[in-house]
Length: 280
Image (tube, rainbow, N blue to C red; front, side):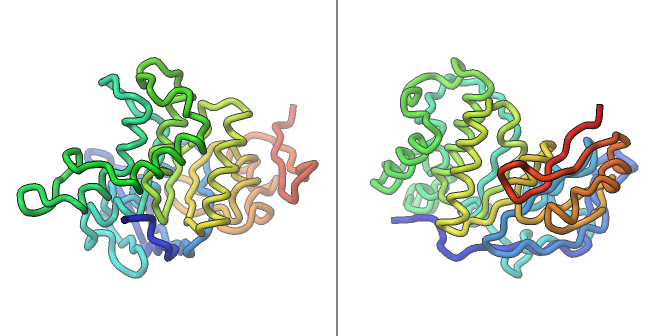
């Protein structure tokens, strides 16, 4: 049986920088940051500040042009793709689906990297695991993910029949089925209504509380980031502008200056966290 690695995992970025091909400006520059095992950290900032690029660097989808990204003290460049995929799950903003896979099939794709490890196809590893029989652990992980995201009634429906918000729930369920030790979330609730926003954050918080999964959240929603993350990284044109607790980062002076918009920062009425409101 192959399950989630119980040992929490942490990152360190040392002078990491990235520039997309054909562009003069840096997407991320001089990024030095430690993310502790089991930490919940939010990455915030204006459009174009480098948030999604940082997430892709942490996922190993991009390699830094300069500097280094390490996972548990080891450069990401030295990890096999399969090993990294077993430890890190990514929930993107959206995915374009072309084929009419069912919800259950897509959630089951989160188990493929584990199924590949069990394969003896061609005397070695199956690159996708699609020819390996589903184990009891696979079945249980998929069923649990469907239940967690309230997707059981839609399990046998085509993904093409679902709304954008429902598809986002499927992507998160796929990540949960993967049973990772690190969860990277890129605007995971942008298409969801209030009910499902709360459900997503309760489930992700439970993963951290119960299994100490390291959570990195990218969000434009400063209030959700304030409620959810214990530490925030504020980016500005690819550089770290401030790191600290929500109270240390979400100050009126800082936000007025960065967003060129007057805001009011007060206390959330039922949580010990700052709340940001646009000033009329």
